[in-house]
Length: 177
Image 1 (tube, rainbow, N blue to C red):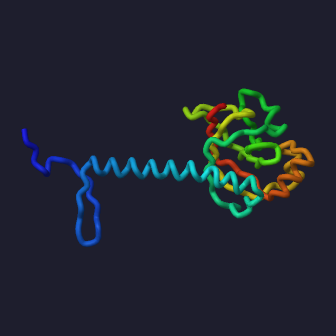
Image 2 (spheres, rainbow, N blue to C red; image 1 turned 30 degrees about the horizontal axis):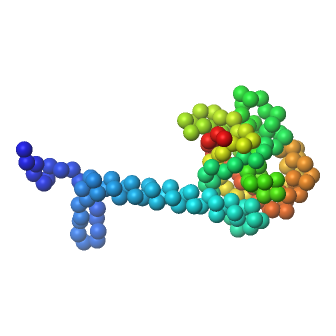
Image 3 (cartoon, rainbow, N blue to C red; image 1 turned 45 degrees about the vertical axis):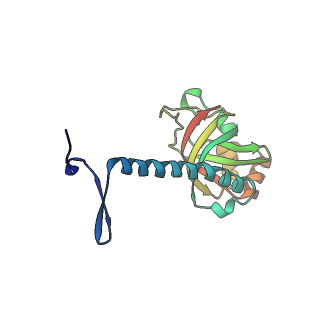
C-alpha cells in the first residue's frame, strides 16, 4: 500500500517568508545531536570550572550558576560527619571537593537540600564519592559562621577566606565511588 505524502506527520519550522517541513527522522536526529553537544559541553565545563576554583581564580565566577559533574568528595566537615546516617548531610552541612588537601573548595548545602542518588532516592554523601553539583559560586560566610555551623578549623577558615569563594549547592546527585 502506497502512502500519500500528506499522510506522514511532520514538524513545521518557520523560516522568514517561507515554511520548511522537517520529517520526523530529521527532527529526531537534530534533537539527538543537540543533546550530545550539550552533554559534551557540560563535561568539558567541569574541568575548566574546577581548575578556576582550585587555582585561586574562583572570584571570577562569583554569583554565577555552575554545574559540576563527577567531582570528588575529598572530605566532610566535622558538622557533617556527626549527622545521623538516616538523615544524610544535615541542613547547614558542608564538604570539600577537589584533588588534595592543598587544592580543594568548600561546598555548602542549603537548609532544605537533600542529596539524592541517580534514582532520585535520598543519599548520603561520603568521603571518596563522586557527585554532580548544581549551584552558584558565592563569597564565604564570616569566620564565626564557618566555625559554628560547619566546624571548620582555624586553618581551614583561613584557606576559605583566602580563596574568597564557596560553592552554594542547589542540588547534589551522589554517584558513589
